[in-house]
Image (spheres, rainbow, N blue to C red):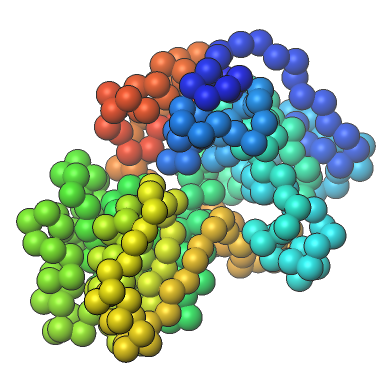
Length: 350
């Protein structure tokens, strides 16, 4: 699926990507539709056109370059979509998400809504033999959700965590908080179907903020203290403000959702943040290391393989690549209310 301009997404034939000596050609199995894909395709456009969108994907290695050592054809893999420069100060200390001159599969270079993707060897990660490729396609958002909690200077262990927005990322954050030992995980979303999916994903304290303001529910369930960690996974101005008004003294507000509009902070909320000495933390992307054993991607793949992170309710539909343009248009125009759509070709798993 090739994006030629804003709203101009076409299903078409293209040559198989070429790879260099350190490159890997991946036959895509499944690519997830991210919340950022819809505005990129239909409202804002990408950094260049034409481009193949999609960055949450799994697949099988079809070919490797002459200098590739870590993976071989036939390997089942996922791909870290951020291609770091290797020369800036952030790259020198392995903080690739902070690279100042990065490339990105699906927004700056061709991504996963295709049969084949070319990626650097360093970005390709083999997956456990027992992990299905459709579940593995959730590695990227699962790693991002974990990164949001690891970025917090306060550990969720033994503390209350409130998550605003029960989309895929929000539900994954909630599950990670539970796995990390949170005393309680409170989830807020006005959409009934999303609340139901959150419950089916093992989160039992799920609330409709239109029935009771989130700050009131959080106060009631934390003996008036507020939540130690508040994660905004919606990016809606109202949820950002509500998270800031619901955090406990000395607590953390983690901003994870892509903002949908300008956020204006009420004076009373700003004053409260100052007086309780709360911390605001921004999150973008995830932590990835080529050789580390417990970076966000390693931890995400292991948790998905063990079943600690439940995905059956989140993975709402699987759509053939040939039907992808229609399905993405349905999502953009509100005709599809699914949670996480995967696009791909089932034959890639054979």
